[in-house]
Length: 231
Image (tube, rainbow, N blue to C red):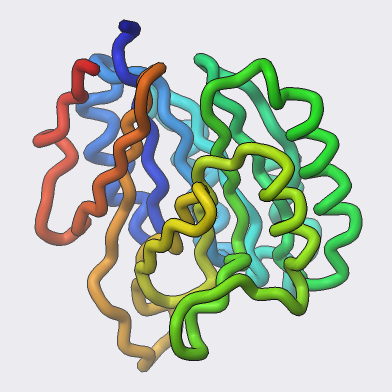
């Protein structure tokens, strides 16, 4: 079988540290798609843009968060151009959705459904990246957030979605529901005086047969320990 592909989903506030490590291993690793899944201010957006232009030797893709568009709505487009798009790479469909400002989501769901319909027989795995999670993690047991995302879950029952990566919630959570894996990725202090827990990134290793994910503590582990996996 073909070698495993690999990508990472870091929190934006840890991206500089993560990407400085990634530069040292990118040359011997397949391309990866990173993303920041919570808002960034002007300084942090600039940092991400500098990373995007640097010698990562791999593409960097960023999902807009609510702080990306509040106060300076044109900043994200200035640095990253697109807020909602998709691409197919190595048998995988990557969909980037913009729910940074919250509801209404009609155009988002239309874009998602049309993209999934077009590619349902053409790809092996589907990964969705979105800032606000479609799962309600904060009121008892995790469950679908039906108030705003009922159509999302209708679409999910019709088309195969393997992984949904999100942020917004200041914690790291995982859930498998009806065949889809939901990961809300990482936590770090983003306001003066606000306490942040440990920060994580997710390493995703993909082959034709399976997808493996690892939750990695950015503070405790080095990405150089991960040299890929042959599947």
